[in-house]
Image (cartoon, rainbow, N blue to C red; front, top):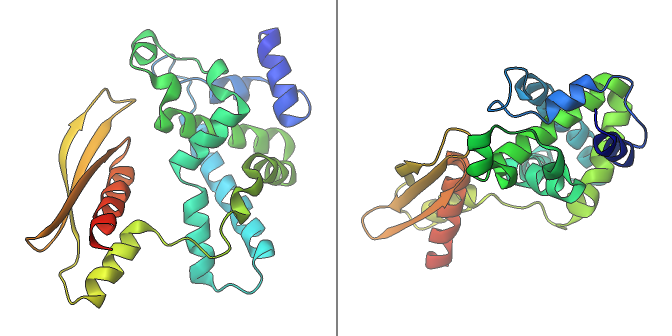
Length: 221
């Protein structure tokens, strides 16, 4: 492990991990090695979900399950995980194959979000859930309390608008997919009947659908 990575791990987690191998793996993309971050990402995703659910349960004692779920879903998206990763400086330490580097994977929401979850998984294995929970809270900072009211997902908002106006359920379709496997780009169109439509792009189908819904809401409201 390089001195730069060791220093970064100490600055990020508060101490050097007892075993650096999982952290090196958490920062390794599939284009670089077969021993990559995917398994740790799987684990870290679940740890993040539990840590965030516990935190929101404490922060908003009067909110019902549905409101808490909206907050949780907004805080664990790939885009938010990628934003946290950028803040922590994860990009500097990513290990990518040449093609992935050339394709700009260093700044891909997909790659950074996955690596962030993998790092949470690695820290959970090294230090336990309490330390992973504290790391999540410190890294997400004021994001958990940024909204006084639970945020409504654009797709849910659009569906509610359609129901309130006696319109058809929104229909989503992928109209284009481009880019390499590690950094895809999806374009999704959403329609409500024949006269309400919009399209948008994103690094995942879900992200593109969300952006399309938001774009159509902007037109309709």
